[in-house]
Image (cartoon, rainbow, N blue to C red):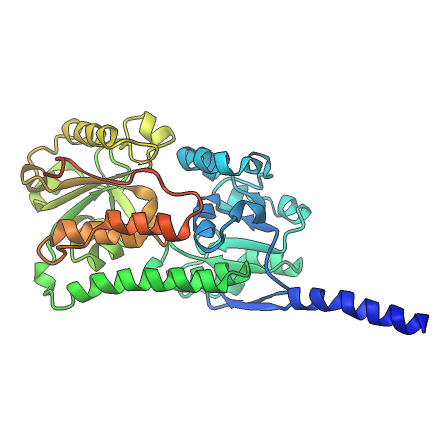
Length: 377
C-alpha cells in the first residue's frame, strides 16, 4: 500500500514538470530549425543592443539574461540607464564580449550554462543566402549542445524581421505576445506599402540620410543595404547608393549638393562618444529643444544650409538605432511622411511609437526619437 501511495505521489509531482517541459521548435532568420527543451530562461545575448527587442516579446526580459556583450551599456548608455532603474540586476550580468564576434568568448559563455545563445547574422559571419554550416561560431556552440538561434534586423531587415521575432519570442515561451506584436508590425508596414502602391519609380525623389551626423567629417551616408532598403520602401531614392559600393561610406559636399536632395535626415544615437564629439543628440532622455539645436548645429557646421531640403524646411533628425530593430517601421513611417506628405496625411510615426510604449514595453521609450528642424505649427 505504501509503495502504491509513493508511486501515485511521484506521478503527481511529475505531471506539472512534464507540462512545463514541453519542447519548443522554432525556425530562425536563417531558416534553421532549432529545438529547445522548454522556454529559454538563461540567454546569452551576443549583441546586447537587442535587449529592447527581447522586451517587445517578453514582459520581464532582464530575468532571462545570463550573459551579454557590453555594448548596451557603452553604446546605448541612455537606454541602459533607463532599464537599470527598473532592473538593477542588469549591472551584475556577466560580460562575454563586446559587439563583435572577435571579442566574444565562447568559453565564458558556456561557463554560464545558457539554455539559448542568440546570435545575429552579422555576428555569426553570415551573408544573405550563405549556408549556416559556414559559421564556425554556430558549429562550436551546437557541438556543445547549446541551442542557438540567429536573428537579423540589420543585414536584410525587411525579410528577416518577422522570422527573427517569431524565433526569439517563441523561444522564450511568449507565442501570443509575439504574434500580437508581429501583427502590429505587419499592419504598419503594409499601411506604408499600400499608400505607395501606385507610385511610379520616377517619383521617388532624392533623399540624403546623413548617418551618425556630426560625429565624423562630412558626410556619412548609407550605400546599399539596411537604410537604403528602408528609404526605397518609404518611396525615396537614397543618393548614396549611386556611388557607394559598400553598405556605408562618405559623400563629399559637392556630390550632395549636385544631387539636390529634397529630404535631409540626420541620424544619431543620443549617447556615447559620437554625441560628445558633435553627433546628433536624439533618443532616450533627450528633449525636443536639445535635439533641434543639435540638428541645426550639424547643418550649419557641415555647410548644408543651401540644400533644397533645408531651404524648403524638409530637414529632420531621427534615432539611428531604429535601423537594427523591428521598430524600423517607425523610421519608415516617419520618412514616408516626410517624402510624400500628401500620401501620408493622418499617419503619425510618433503615435505609432506611443502605441508601442502602451501595448508592448514595460519600460517605455521616453525622449525625442525624431525631430523637425522647424517646430510643427
